Image 1: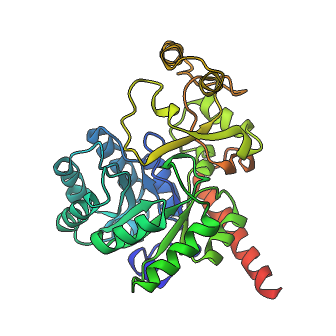
Image 2 (image 1 turned 120 degrees about the vertical axis):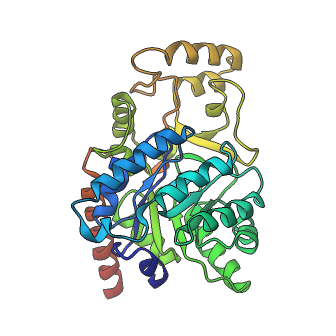
Length: 346
């Protein structure tokens, strides 16, 4: 883990990263995670003016912390979705704020990451480029062509968007690690998907990951940007493998699906999806969805009765209370260290 520690000197072990959830992970969440020794991430926003606002919030939060405010790079990361953003617009944000990590996900083609990585490094040479991927073949191709500083291996249990076809991290991380090593790559791997507590973190580290990403757990943080009904639905959900599902439908609710072919998303099994399974036409589902999202609830509801997607991973059943993001980092890290120490004695 020395490679990541050298590049992210404020972080503690194990490395905890909040997922760069677009529209949810803002400057308040990212800064709280970083201040407690994690790597805070701001979600990739379509509106780059909004991204600047969140970056400024994080930057201001570090002012009372000399070790962070004097960092050569802004001690957080920011995610970008290459399939919807113009590279030249993104580069101005990167050059202005020089984030410690630029996280790339969902390019139209794997080879697009090469152009983005080269341009990002030119705009901010001290920023690291992390790329999220969900297959061994994808990891190898990206390693060969884009020279990433780390790969986030996203397993099929993850909430939100990911590879439609995939494996859980229990096989994905070690297979990717072996495949990369055979070709001479020594890349830090960050594990994502289904991790919400110290047990998941400890497991990921033993699989070969050098850090973990948690998204669903931080949906229950005080700093996350989220509708109260959305958060309440996450907190009440139980039996995550049953109350969540992967489907392209969730990206068709507003209209045509804009995501590249490789991707679908995992959400709670909302009313829209139940209608879809029961044979209701897509046109009718879209009509009902678009009528509901203009109301105060924005289409979200508890009891799996909402019509708007509620992105959550299979670990959602282990998330049952709202806490400060910094406290989440401290508690999960402590749990993981205790579990690993116990396992070592065994």
